[in-house]
Image 1 (cartoon, rainbow, N blue to C red):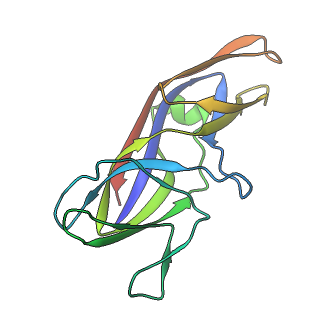
Image 2 (tube, helix red, strand yellow; image 1 turned 30 degrees about the horizontal axis):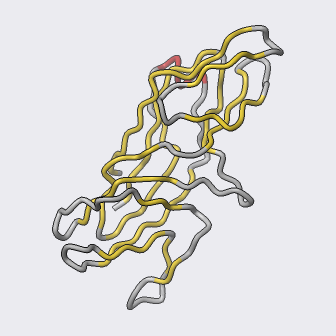
Length: 163
């Protein structure tokens, strides 16, 4: 089953919002998960990054995350792909949800995304770079010196949708 991590936010003076996810510094996507076999929700957050590869038990394949349910012993795994989309000022104006990550899950479901880690964006008109943005509280405020205006990210919503 493939899940999409959708982002919706109110961007003021900003565009191209995305996680900082490079080969040198991969983003650690944090989720709450649930076993599809026994429906038990895992009691701790899990993190997945796109560069880690783990062997699948009893298979030749690999995945970014491998898990064994403590309740029923069922094996599960997930592989992630960063989409080519960033959240733009236009998306914000239109109230769109944009899929920024695809997660292929086997034996588990994503319950909730927890936005821990740095995000980045740029000024919508000035292209001023804003890095190390913390969205754990669902908002960000700063000042664009090149444009001479306040900028903000508010009303951040994360949705996990099935494809």
